[in-house]
Image (cartoon, rainbow, N blue to C red):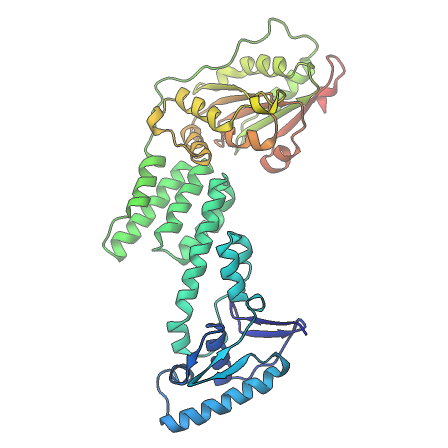
Length: 413
């Protein structure tokens, strides 16, 4: 027999995946109270307090009624009964692997944050009618979940997934309008997604909430994030980092036309991914075309040789490339963060409202390229690689250009 107990949502006991009908009223309060303290003694007095919401009848009557409630719960559970009698009280004797609450805590402690959060089905014991239970026992559980949720989001931000988190964090800040941690993550995610103006608006919104509702200013972590990410950066001069193009490029008229057609400005950054075999002329094509359209990007031209086709130990580190880009864009060394995700966020924020051309030559894989991509709709990125980057096409909407030998027309694909 497989039994599972659930309190992270409506109260449920499953026997072989089938819900067991549970007694209503005080029976549910009793079982919920014990399961929320698995394998821990709960005194008769505390159970009486929970079952009658702090207003019990005479003590003798309450104790007799409690014994009747215990019997009803045990009968309902049958072979799945977990209620054990102890001196002066009761406890729920439960295998930790069979209770969603203990699984949640174990997974969270092991760093399996998404799996931990997946244990939740809604508000804890949401169908149990006890004011005392929901006032005393449920809020600490909800706080545990929010802390784990925040840690999971922080891990995603560290991986540069800010754009994917914006909607989730917007909803969380609506549900918890005075929780600074979620607001800081919301600001960070917007900035990481290349939306600095919205990030600044979000900061001003939480500052207003705190001032109006609590009469306080944002805390140090949120203020530091504002200073680090949202302070406007002025460029001393537009960088011009493109290497010289080859003297001649023959047999590539169709490919040049294809690149020009793909570079039509839209509502998001334009990304072009050129792939082809070694020596086919990917770099020559990219640089020739980049110089042809360079005047469209008055705010700067960035270039990096990612050395993706060389030995693994010589491949360019995206963090180092970003440090070079940020320096070229006028960011002092002291303002460049040490973390890759933070560097990427700062870089995207700096170029978000500018027209910048970025050429990423000889890329190894999508993971190397993604932190280096701008997100502003006035920007354009050209990536060359021996590999076809399907991930960039599917996820970032890159335009693929496969380069064949000169004159074969394969660049039209």
